[in-house]
Length: 287
Image (cartoon, rainbow, N blue to C red):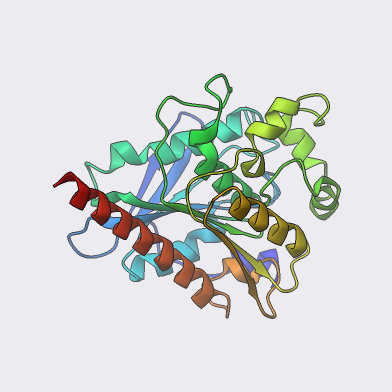
């Protein structure tokens, strides 16, 4: 499957398009299932090597459509990417954080259950999803920290970065540009704190479930490196796992119309169910 194949998939228009900032690329698309709710939410973050010329939120709109039919609300977010004013450090990370935190304002208007929010990203978006799960671990002095970030119930990384300090040469080769260096505004030796603060792997334990889903034929991020990250996360005390999809490559795992989709959907449901169970236990404790 190619990027063009993914981008050619059909989908229905979103129920609402909502800005979270003044820039034309600071918006999200909300899809709400039928029924009274409140509905669990999956935040979807598209990839594209962090570059504006490669991809848009359209890539994950078909997935959002299918999740809506499954009874799950989706908040598919656009963000500033390399090649656009304000992208990179700290703008792109602030966009992701602001978009996710906007759910606080949306929940009173739409039937959303903020105790059941999972963040899923593909490729570069997978790395941003991991970072979203790590936000509560950021030092208060960080340029990309906020006082009270929305705490998500889990993250799903579809073949994206998990540590900006690792596999840099391979990622740059696949993206045909030094995108990590461009995103962070310099090499690790020049801006070491940025590499730490943008990396889930540097902020372990995250304290939330993490699921990494890789295609058997993945070429952007080596699955051996992903498995090593999972081992590190587990050693730190986190609930982390990796799933390998037989026969799939980098783009098949982002499509709801391939053999990868049942695996992705099952992991989404597992994380949402776990968050429901945790909420129920907290409720019982409070009685």
